[in-house]
Length: 423
Ligand SMILES: C[S@@+](CC[C@H](N)C(=O)[O-])C[C@H]1O[C@@H](n2cnc3c(N)ncnc32)[C@H](O)[C@@H]1O
Image (tube, rainbow, N blue to C red; front, side):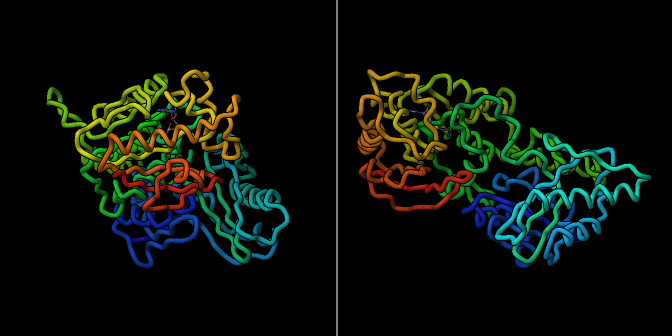
């Protein structure tokens, strides 16, 4: 019986892909699977919630909706929160935290709204548990409560994920500009290499020539091998009252039986996932991350300048990357020879406002991208390249015309995933 209403928030632009992913994982559709702004609403059961936490690559978290109702002021929030049977979900010995988000709410202070919900919850426990109430822990709570306010309605949720789902548990080594795992997965869906609705991936080589800590290729490898996204991490539902260890074990066992591990002693199948980076330190990071993720055998990682590396396979494939952004990056490779090698590390997607001029006044970003396009046109005929960038002028810098443009958000930064067909 689909007794739970779940909400899976995701980055803007990803809602449609997430709905496909949820359908592929649960077979839900119609009124049981609604695509909304900022996420997907699902009517499912506890097992469905477990499965979505374990497998979703696009959701930020999985929330169970406990109540939704009209409200006018903080007193209504107190009353509604006090009516929820929190004691069915956790005990007064566990710590909790209330987060409030809003979409054009008329309330003056979201902090005050959170405080009233916190009070209601604590008062309810105090009345029912002999004066004992759970403590607040804003850093590492056992239980997270989310309230979402629209102008007229409040939705109260309990979080079943805990740490956001982009934290897969394998990335211990990262550079200065790591891509969130959820965004890397969204890029793989948006470029069509991964089809979330059918849970298939394309049988074509995939290459990230600026792979950094390896996020894109590692996500791709886990998809190729059918490995669950959250197989290495823990979830908040494990400490909620309805948790049933045997049921969770069964869901994990089923996931493991669908994943491919290399048979001992067998020849490694032909690798079709490739990553490289001009910084050897990054390649080491990517290698260690891939090993932790259990997918190192499915990819080839190398050092090298994107402006010089030859195609990693004789068959054309797809390049998927978030290229260096900003004036300092290109100084790492041949486009920047003679300038400092260390400087590129601080240029990131999170510095979109930076000037493109380097200290000597030359425009290295333009030089890097112009040379990249020439290199691709000479050596990568037949490949298609998908680049995620916040830079609206990237096509002009590459001197190439994009054939597709998919808007995706990297946190608060508006980006586009651009497709270039290399002829
Ligand atoms: C925005 S980061 C990519 C982050 C990566 N997707 C990850 O998740 O960690 C850009 C990467 O480009 C690399 N890079 C900069 N110039 C390069 C060049 N000429 N050739 C190859 N890689 C380069 C940097 O070392 C950095 O790791």
